[in-house]
Amino acid sequence: MGLFRRKPKLPPADRPPLSADERVLAWAAVGDGAGGGVVVATNLGLWLPGRADRLGWHDVHKAVWSGRELAVTPAERVAERDGYLLVADRPAESHLLLDPGELPHQVRERVTRSVAYTQHHPVPGGAARVAARRVAGVDGLTWTVRLDPGTPPDDPEVLAETDRLVAVARAATAPVDG
Image (cartoon, rainbow, N blue to C red; front, side, top):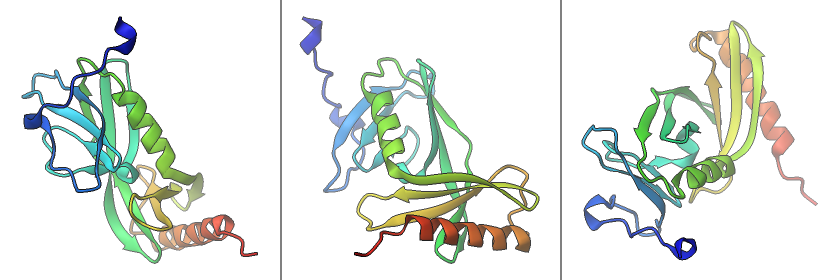
């Protein structure tokens, strides 16, 4: 009997303000004592309790499922460079999920699917991760560079190297005409 048990529909009071082309894939009630709420995964991103806006899948740097808690580390734009964004980790947001259902699977699948390219490189004074992400509703890839903690974001040598790394990665991943 449990094989065909379906998760109840998301209560209207917990439904985030979805866009016209957005649909709910999975949701779970939060039981962390901070006013509850729900975590909602859609085809366009993740709605977290206490946030008025959706976090696009391309803006999730990291998502970790412990078996009880979902910890999401969002990206923050630090600077716009020529052809890419310099980003940093915002503080992780953790939520205890009472009945997670398909939510952890959907989060992992969607974040993974958004990544088209990722490579970690040394740069002067530290290291950086160059990534290309697919963004729902946007043609082509969106390029980002995330500097490792302690890597100076304003150092001209660092920026020159990240510019070079993105250019090399873009060239390596460009479609071949023919």
